[in-house]
Amino acid sequence: MQNILTAVVQGIIEGLTEFLPVSSTGHLILTGKLLDFTGDKADTFEIIIQLGAILAVAVIYWRRILSLLGVSRFSYGESQTQASGKLNLIHVILACLPAMILGLLLHSFITSYLFSSYTVLIGLVLGGIFMLFGERRQAAVQSEGVDQITYRQAVYIGLFQCLALWPGFSRSGATIAGGLLSGVGYRAATNFSFLIAIPMMVAASGFELLKSYDTLTASDAVFFITGFIVAFVVALLAVITFLKLLERFKLAPFAYYRFVLAAVFLVYLVVTGN
Image (tube, rainbow, N blue to C red; front, side, top):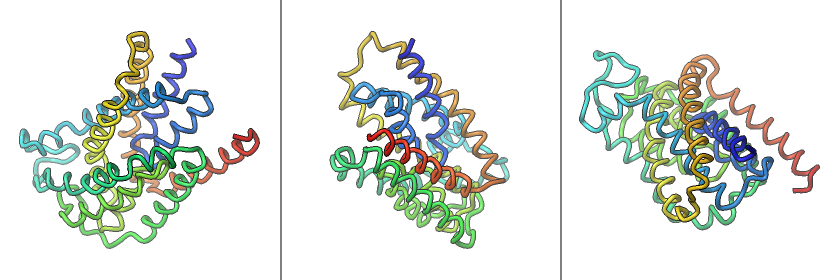
């Protein structure tokens, strides 16, 4: 029963935070510490529930994904007259390559030195500061819609995405704020951030799963399936809600939340001596 409860809690955390600019990795590391759920099994479980979150975004953006693959001319969230079909796979590739290459080069360093509670807290604070900076120093909007994003802007967003290789920084926070600094509007930056999350997370999860597949056992099937389903359902609701909230509140509230979380957890670590 305890295992199932852990699966549900971590599934909810993953679904809520994966695509919000608050860092899912940071939250999973911190809650894993609170739940005493760490080690190889926990690492593999995190990969499985990330795949559940990815599936949720793929379901929401299925029209856009088919459009990118040349199967359909329809774009999610836009009318036929608005969808010019200018966004293509080259935009996605340009935005994903920098972080993929750097992630491969620095993988050993990142996993060895940056996955502690304290480095995550640093990432939460730095990511929050960057989000506030991006919002307050937003460039003049040149791309209101996702189809107006240029190749140059895709490259800039991809470079900013590299910041999220530091656990706790937040991939969505880095790409949305980076989009704002590059002259992309809030809605377009958010949609593009979610779209490029799919290949980024599939690549990262696939790489990690190949390394840890031997930790999977039949006895853990219910545990992993529960986490996967919970993460999928919660992520589905979280993404839809976030798209609506962003139009009203922008990035600042999420940045302040990160500061509060970092402060509270720092106190916890100091008091418990962890």
